[in-house]
Amino acid sequence: MQPNAHVNDNAPSNVDTIAVFDFDGTVTQFHSFWRFVMANTSITKKLAGTGLIVRLLFDIKIKKKPLMLAREEFVRFFLRGFDAHQWRDRATKFALEQLPQWITPEAKARIEWHQSQGHRLALVSNSPVDYLVPWAKLYGFEHVAGSQFAEHNGQLTGEMQGNHCFGPEKVNQLEALINERANTIVYAYGDSVGDRELLQYADFAFYRNFSTPGNLPW
Image 1 (cartoon, helix red, strand yellow):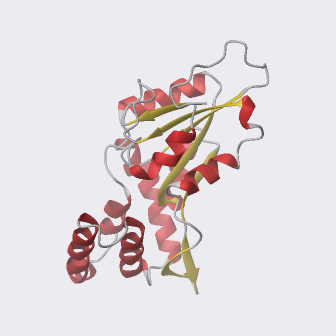
Image 2 (image 1 turned 120 degrees about the vertical axis):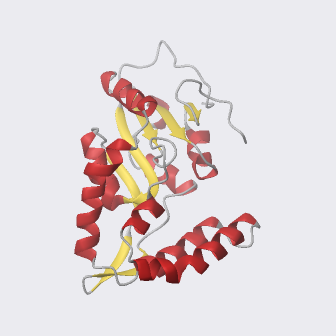
């Protein structure tokens, strides 16, 4: 079905409906990951990493380096050596205390509408599962997919564990929840090129809004 397709009034009674949301910039008013990392980084390391951040932003802007490769370099510098237990504790605190203040009223209302309709909720984001999962539990999300970071001897290694939850991987995560695509209605919400494949896959695709499906920029 196309992103702006209409629900068939004669759909079978066993039809399943899933609403899948991107997080940063879609549900939140701010991008969370780098803010979380910077809030939990020492002044010394922030100063040491300033040049790296400037270079990565410039490389992304001139398309010298793909976004995900730049992200990996950022993660490698700032997360390597971070105590894993402390990382998870701070992530949970961030999820419960800070993130609820960043959720837009429109996103909250849309999530609650899907809940009132009995729809299943999924969150697919490239932000860390360490704070996505505790936040999602507050809102009744059934499934959460996000970044995971490798650990060794109780410390983060600075490397990814698994794939970036970006682009086609978001569709892969969603398809794991679907039994029969023909009997499933998918609502998808996103705000960037990283959500392109997900929005194209959906029956109702909402790009940077919660009221008008379709009108995708690609």
